[in-house]
Image 1: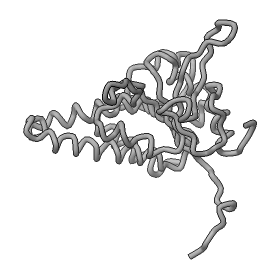
Image 2 (image 1 turned 90 degrees about the horizontal axis):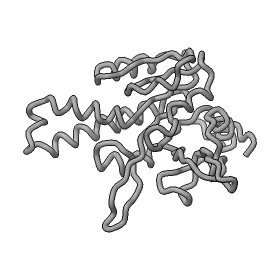
Image 3 (image 1 turned 30 degrees about the vertical axis):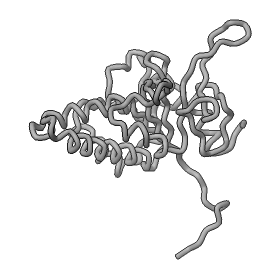
Image 4 (image 1 turned 135 degrees about the vertical axis):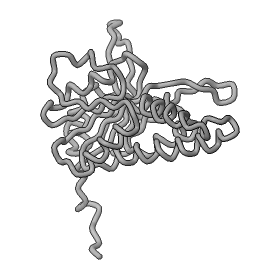
Length: 227
């Protein structure tokens, strides 16, 4: 057994979750990454914004197709970045397929249905998180209620997934549009939980509000550049 010092353990990759409302430009963020080094896993029909680019894309519409790309990524070293769009669609797809099983579709077996669903989504998210590559996952932002108070949440089926998804990842970025002093709209990625309940930066290398450039974000996390 070899005991290392924390200073000797290099951080070579990162997994990031980007959450935001529909249409804000989460998918467009992939344009900051090099085309030849980036694989897009598309689970929704939302690639119109990438017209004119030349990124390799795998379209996933079924759980079998999802398993196929996971098997490929287990051994492939072709891509430095894996962009998964989106966890919202992935969760909905898995839930819809599970409901095709008459046994699981029976309302009396809802506990079994949601248990199986949570097991599968947890396994997929952790699989992507642990890949030997830089991983970006997108998710729609939703809303819920905590008593009488409205709260922001992850728009993905399953209460247990909503509650746990943030804890599985080191970096959660919330994509927001703000207005500056000149009344101009500016886009920023919120990284601090003090600024947004869904945000998280365990690296400690990001400012509370970062310009929406994924390449710069990865450079800061992995190399400590331009904090």
